[in-house]
Length: 452
Image (cartoon, rainbow, N blue to C red; front, side, top):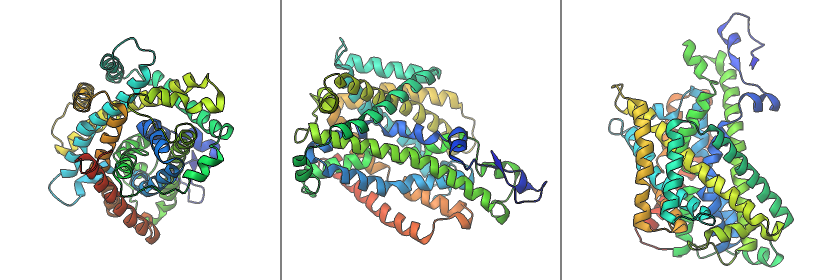
């Protein structure tokens, strides 16, 4: 770590731990939370929705994803700004949101339990569809084995090695996808036909799929709480001021705060950019191989396996399936772990200090999510693509509030010097209005006003 060098020795600001500024120091000391976040994001949105939109709309789907990423970026940027500018997780300040007492905490806990159960079901169903290529069991039996194993691993907290292996496969898949685009780019006919071919923006097909992409890509806003926990686990930033009882409004500490915010944003930008590049690569490959025949519930595994065959040949079928399985299964594990830990952190705050056995809460949530995830399968059926679209549309609707909530707690708690500039505020206003529109589109899909 770098130490302050332009202050008088022995003063509080001179002894603060500053972040490493060099890239080598950054990767050694600070890099990591964004890749944990990316492990969640590279799941249903990339493996199922991206090729589905590419199969329907060709390369125009790239503009859809870029637009969604640009609009949604601020929801997490505000969380990172709070993480390092205040030295805590934004969920801590949700008690200050206007309205009934602790309503935001209870709503967040509801999302992390009930709605994350639905997300787990949708991603696990797609994971199962890929596993069925080699599984001798029925779909529901294979699903039960995969979710059950994931739940047990998270319950006993002995999945770190598996998570690392899955991360390696996921990153390898990303590299393979990017190389695949370079080796086998779309034909000139596909490029000319689809790149700027705007579909019917008011049609049921576009609204439903756009709402799903807006809900799942790159992931839900609630993960700003999860990345907050992972960021604070790094034990850097303004939390050091809080521990020492130093006033963050004091200008002597502003350079220190500024450097930590930049470090947190640098880390998140890497994960965010990595996630977007993979989504674009998947769309491009899907446009080349699948357009105009997108994956369906019945042929998801075969369609995904063939995405790289034109670039690398038949051997890549199994490489693609293995990488896609790893990406989806790692998301299942991370969802179970992240949601259970977040809920166990939130309940003591919502109950205002009353004694809570957080470990019991964590274990109960894991078991409840694993068992409850069967319900969407019963309601929708063994339809992995349909389930992803349906759950993602719901997510676009229910997670809207995290964006303005994160902005509110930033404005209320950060030193004035680190609150958003006028330019950022204009961006937030426009982005939040669009996110509410995404939610309306999700509601139209969810309540069968339209149908894909």
